[in-house]
Length: 237
Picture 1: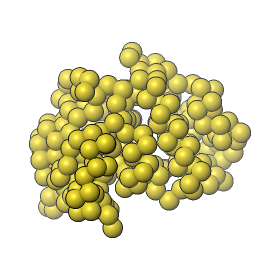
Picture 2: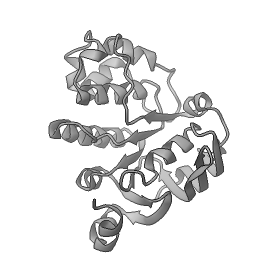
Picture 3: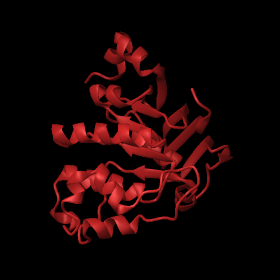
Picture 4: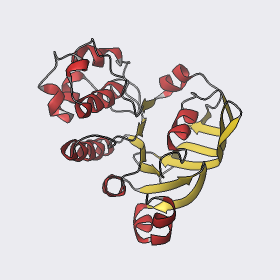
């Protein structure tokens, strides 16, 4: 594996008084796609929120490009070059596609791909056909693409993608897989929260499997595909 761009060690997280994460360790290398897998409620989204500084209480270490970021406010973490695409999309429904993209615009960042609306329309042809359409008049899959594109306008080095294939049409899932491959070719790193094993297998180099806020498997995606016991215990519904 390449040098870790993101390194999480002993991460613990709470919602109120309830502890959700228990000593989570994970790494994402430069230009790597890593899947964070597990059933609903396993702690995948909570792990991403903890990395982004969105939990009120966390313990442990979260290092990005060698710097400790745990405890920093989310806007500072974002400015460092971490982008987050939440599961619930959060597009601005009254703004057009282009206006949504402008909201996410940040200056170019050394070591990260520089995105413009035109480059994103090449990556997401569907969006290029509707630059003036309000976000509220788009399908769920189109909104998902717009949320990813808006995050990329911040020129991140690492993107946290939370359940991108959840609840969207198979054609959109296919386009999402193509998009992640394209981002990887650009040198972008991706941490992908996912339940869909075929989708994760198609795009990811390595995987971590969570159950009840603990890492139960860490290894290559090929090793996970071959480990029927882990898949049956922690991934099948």
